[in-house]
Structure formats: structure tokens, C-alpha cells
Image (cartoon, rainbow, N blue to C red; front, top):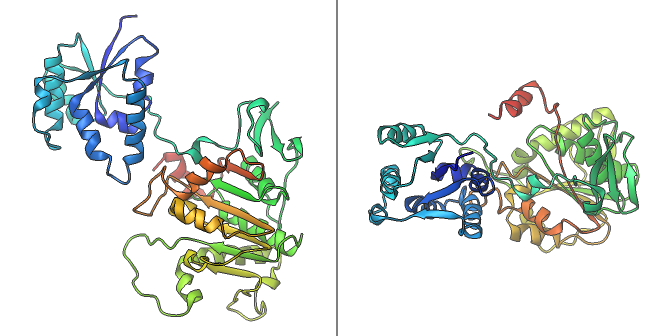
Length: 396
């Protein structure tokens, strides 16, 4: 097969940093990077949504610079302009005198421009977008020998748990607070949340896979059935979507109510499945109010300086916390605490964080391998409902 000379556009590198290696295909093809692509990457490195991907691209460029051809010619001295960058790239390719260059770009206008300049083009179809640590490490290992503590591997179609007490084939279904898992992954998540020797669990999934519901059901079981803990804390960063609501009147519980209404709705749903009277001040008088001795919803600011003991702590939307905030929060955990961290690193709403630099991802990156920590990614066909199902399947 003849050697191909691929010239990569910026959008391909951003969409799939590994495209450099996949198009190289071992040593079969040549990879060219125009100088103006480097300049464009330099402008994107300060973008809070893209800088982690740019960093990944630069790492690959530096690690494989001996096999990459950087195009630097007279056109490379042209003043950089984001509006004219495509023109500069085409000019660099023409002047480089590459034999039968193939410009790889998903920019359809640039494809048309390249054709008018006599340059062949291809779309990059084998896209493998950037994945955070919490997405890459699903909680499963390829084989038993490579299994981190508290992870799973498949054996004859069944999950095997590499737990604190040794290997265990999971051929049973957990059920807590009359909640049955709807998928094998939910079943394994329940196992981790309920395990006596696992202190901290992180769960990654898109919206609608039931991670908050499972965590609340497990917390009610641990506090009111197994009596291993005496209280449930729910913590959540207060990041607003859309227009700001401004000042909210009332005490802390009233201020948090708009942010945490879905928690109350899920608890009432669980309450109908199995009475949870002890978490309410008076379960016979609506509207139901939580007993702060048993169940408390708090913003993160109220945790500073406290010492949490004998409790189940659910941290929702952990991806909207910084590394510093996560560290400050987790160091508040004292004796006999089960901590369940939930989130989706693809839905970072904090403008100062990104898919890689966020609390959930730092937890997975730093705690993976510890004997009292576990992580799992929820998957499966069924989710919150039929609308959520088609949104997830269509990748809207």
C-alpha cells in the first residue's frame, strides 16, 4: 500500500487528539502539521472548555515530534489572524511541495477551498473524542491480573468483583428500599454503595441513569435499616443554569430549596415505596420537612470547619467542584463515613472548570488503586424515561 501524506487541520486534532497516531498507522503514512495550526492551538489553550484537549494534543505532538513533519515555510511568517487561518494553512501546504498531500479536515468550507486550490481532502471519520479519567476507567479491568482494588472484570459473561474479601462472582441482584436495579451496572453500583469495607465510591454517568436515586435509596437503607450510620448529608454545588435568579430570601433551607427540589422529589418517591418516617419531623403533616438530625441538605460553604462522623454523605454534581474544593470537602470526613460522589464530567457547568480539571475527575485520578475506594460508570439501555433514552441514543 502506497504511503499517504496527511496534513491535519486544527479541528481534527481538537475533536480527536489520537488522530495523529491512527492516521500514522504505525509507520505506514506521513503526518504533517502546518505552523498555523500550532498558532491556532496556542490561542485555544486559554479557552476553559478546550484547554484540557489542547494540552492532550500538545502532549502527543511532543511525544511523537520525531515522526511528525511540521510545515514551516515563507507563509508561516504571515501575521496570525483567526479569520484568515484557513488561507494560511492552504498556502503553507502549497508551498511545502508535499507529494500528493491529503488535507484532513472536518471543516466543509475548508474542504471546498482546498479543492479550488488543487489539494485533496478527507474527513476524519474515526473520531474518538477526548475522555476524562472518570469516563476511561469504567470500574472494569481487562483481566483479573490487571484489576485495581474494588473493580470488576468479565468472566463467562458474568461480572467478577475484585473486592476487599477476594474475588466474587456477582450472580445475584441487590435490592434496597424496594428499589431494584434496572441494569447490571446499577446492580454493581449498589454493591459498591452498600459494601462495608468501601468508604468512598464515585459514580459517573450521563443524566437519567439513576445515580442519585440509587445513592438515596442506599443511604436510607444504611441509616434506617442496617443502622450503620445515623444521618444522611446531601451536598451540592450551587451552579445556576441560564439566567441568574438573584437574591433568594429565607433561611439556608429555603435558599437551597430551588437547587435541591429534585432531591425532595426522589425522597418522596422512595417514601411511597417504603415509609421513611424517621427522616421527617412529622410525616403525618404535609408539606413534609426533613428532621435535621437524620437528613440534611447543605451547600458546600456550610461544611467548612465541620467534622462529619457516622453519616452517609452524598456529593451530587461533583464535576462542578474544583480540586481544591473536593480536597477541602473530603478532609471533613471523620470516623464511620460512607461518601458517595456522583457526577458526569461531560456536563461541567462551572465556567472555571473543564472536562479534565474538575473534582470528579481528580477523585478518580488520585484515588484509583486505594483499597477503600471504588468507581463505576453506569451504562445500559434504560434510563429516566423514553425522551431521555432517545436524547442519549441520538447523542444530541
